[in-house]
Amino acid sequence: MELQGLRAIVTGGASGLGAATAQYLAAQGAKVTIFDLDEARGTALANEIGGNFARTDVTSEESVQAAITTAVDAMGGIDALVNCAGIATGERVVGRDGPHSLEGFARTININLVGSFNVLRLAAAEMAKNEGPERGAIVNTASIAAFDGQKGQAAYAASKGGIAGMTLPLARDLATQGIRVCAIAPGIFATPMMKGLPQEVQDTLAAEVTFPKRLGDPEEYARLAGFLISCGYMNGEVIRLDGALRMR
Image (cartoon, rainbow, N blue to C red; front, side, top):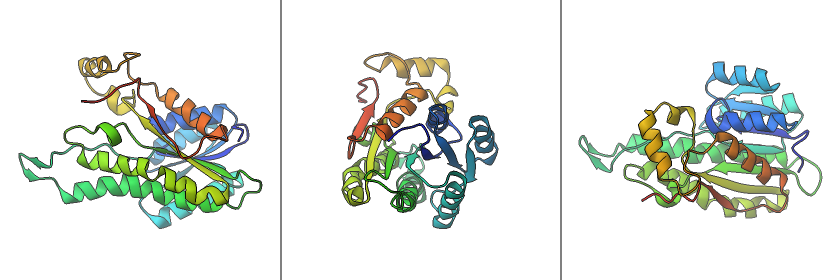
């Protein structure tokens, strides 16, 4: 699947890994529609890359369906989806204020895991309408927390473990539709949230990476996403992108 002329949706595309992916795909000649709740930043980036924006709550079927319709109207169809929308949370199972908030746990699962599946299923239904043996490609965002979850990451690790765990069954389910599914499990990346931390904290985190000893560049995520979309034999795989970091 060529990136030139590709019709792609990027969720969480207004910032961080999603913004880098939207910019990279557009630079390769793809048509891009950004799904995000941040209308100001999403619209600005869409205008910058010559793409489109749809304000989207990934946890809402109605919101996502309306955004899918916007994307199809703007691009003439959908060939690829990169799911980057999500939240990072931290809370101990039993902390100073008592047990872990059930609402907080459910919210993390709902946005990161259910939200990704919600967009995926509706986008895949549109991809299935395409012609040819290969009709679509999907890249979800897991995390190394799915495998090396830290203290306070029960909710986040569970949500990202779900992304990793559903990759193969999704690929098997969608094979008859000519749609491939992979996932990227990023390590520590220099996203706006991470850059907001004190420099000494960033340096300490970077020192934990095996090699190279730095934070990941969001464009590196974007280039891998582009490769997974373009390489027709990549399917059903979860790829760590972490400089060989193994969290302890």
